[in-house]
Image 1: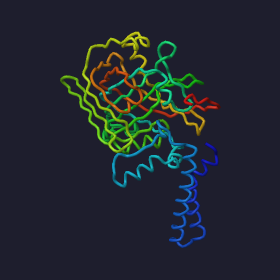
Image 2: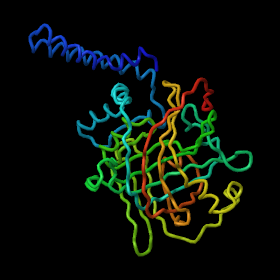
Image 3: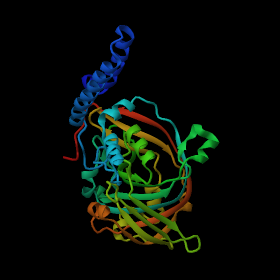
Image 4: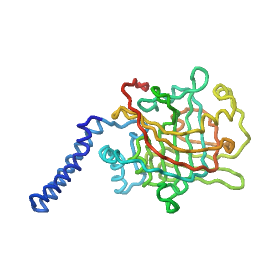
Length: 350
């Protein structure tokens, strides 16, 4: 982003600071000062927002995708504006990332193997698709849904027990940086059933679209192991899905899957490790890496079978059939956000 655009983004704040300084020196009538400052703040904010939306345009996926809260009340429309504001995002961007932790339970992975060209339109700027199989013919699309356990700042210590445990889903593809060969996953979309963490993730991090669900259901029967879930967008912009899955024996992969993975274990070795989320920002000429610690014992992955339905998934993968599994519990840590400068890049999405 150009220096002039950065200055423009902060111009409303600078206007307020200037007004405060003026009041200390010349003591103008308070009402006049407040009115003039407010008008100047709003005018500069509107100009800056319009300019930054040219620099950071709306996209079909990722953090710059259209965002709408599912509620119909007036406050929700204000939240829409905050969540989509490029100016507010620019204000918060310089702030340091604070380590977040969660004791996650019942992570259900739903995975689709599709021809790689189906996922190319969902690539972020600056990154390439990680492909598998003969001649890199295929690529993996997954969505995983789980219940947080006291999701909050690590610095809270024992007070983190007071934090909520929302339901979250991450819709992702595997990507790599062609310059550094660093691999990770990219969030095509993700969503949560609580507004506050959705806003926090969206505004404070580069790679989290984080929409809000209208309604969610996620229940696991402790006797049979059946997992039933429903993720509903309502009137919002979150992805939708529903399913009913049962534990099963280790699946025998069909011909397409066997062309990419020698066994179910080999598939897990590729799909499960996720040390970082990655995204690209053309306006900053950089790739962002969210480094996370998510240790998962592959022997604890429980195969699942059953029904999964989603209009969003169908639009992405067509009629591909999923391979599913569950991880009972794990400890999640999001520790840092790192950036890799990009001097020149060919946009493979075009």
